[in-house]
Amino acid sequence: MNNVMVIDGYRAIIQYDPEIEMFRGEFSGLNGSADFYADSVEALREEGKTSLRIFLEVCQEKGIEPTKEYSGKFQVRLPEDLHRDAVDAARARGESLNQFVAHAIQHELTT
Image (cartoon, rainbow, N blue to C red; front, side, top):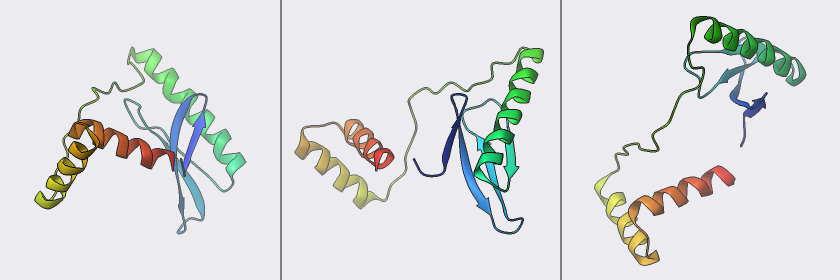
């Protein structure tokens, strides 16, 4: 995936902030915020490790589970015509709408 850095098994979304001319990373899937900044990829990785270590230490001290749990369910709102077309496309493939959407998301994540 573009703009994702994996640090010690945790995923961080990376963006470049042109105003401060630095990269910003923010870990995803955590029960709190852990972000970090640096002006190079190497420094970003090091800052990320430090930020993650501190976050995990604080979670341990406070007895907080550091990672979020996902139910596997979410609601999507679509324009009526897109909903209709998606149902038709799913039926034409012999899939449920849920399977069709899951395949579409998987496709986008691997391209």
